[in-house]
Image (cartoon, rainbow, N blue to C red; front, top):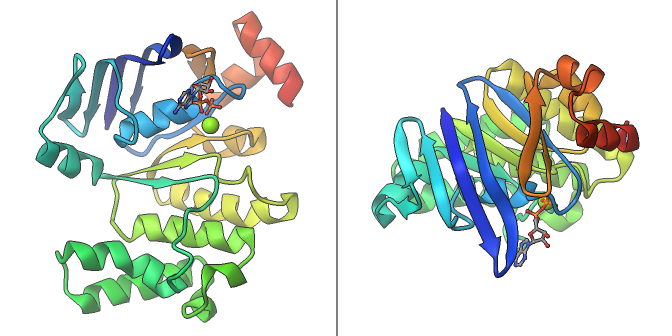
Length: 245
Ligand code: ADP
Ligand code: MG
C-alpha cells in the first residue's frame, strides 16, 4: 500500500530524516514509536505532502507521490494524497462549524457525491463513534476524547484507504484516551490500513502487527510487537523501552 525508500529531509543543517525505508501492506496496523524529536511527525506528514522531502521515494497504492526526490504533478499529488486521511494530536476541528458540518465540509466542497449520500455517511459515522446526539454542537462543547472521535470520523468521511494518526491521544487526559483507542481498535478490526505514531505501548502491543522504532531520524529497528517489545535487538531500542514501559 505504501512503499517508502531512502526518505531524506533536513531543516537547514538539521537532518531530520536520514534514509528512511519501510513498507506498509494493505490491512497493516503499523505503530511508530520513538523519542520526541526523532522525526516521527515529519515522516508521517511527508506521506500526505504536508512536508516536502529532499530525497527518496514514496509510492502509494502503485503510484509515486515522489520518485528519487522528484514530485508528481500537482494534480497527481492531490489524487494520491486523497487516498490518505490524517488525525492530528490537537484534533484540528473547525471551531466555527458544528460537528455535523465538520464532517460534511470536505466532501461537500469536492462535489463528487450527492448531498444525500454525504449526509447518510455522516449519520452512520456519528452513530459509529457514539456522537449522534452531538451533531449540532460546536467542538468547544465536546471533551477532548469526543473531539478526537469527531476528527477520526471526519477523516473517514473521505473514504480513505489509509489512515495516519500522529499521537492521537497525547493531548488527552488519561481517562479519555480509552474511548479514542477503542475507535481505533474497531477500525483495525475492520481491516483499515493504519500508521499510528503513539506513546501508547499497550495499544501498539495489542493492535499493531508491526512496530517501527525511530530514533534520531532513523528506523533503528522494526518487527512484530511481541518480538520488538520482548526481545529488542538494538541497545537504543532497549534503552527507549526501559524508559517507556
Ligand atoms: P517527533 O514527531 O518524533 O517528535 P518531529 O518530526 O516533529 O519529531 O521533529 C524532528 C526534528 O525536526 C526535531 O528536532 C524538530 O525540532 C525539527 N523540526 C520539526 N519541524 C520543523 C520545522 N518546521 N522547522 C525546523 N525544525 C523542525
Ligand atoms: Mg511528533
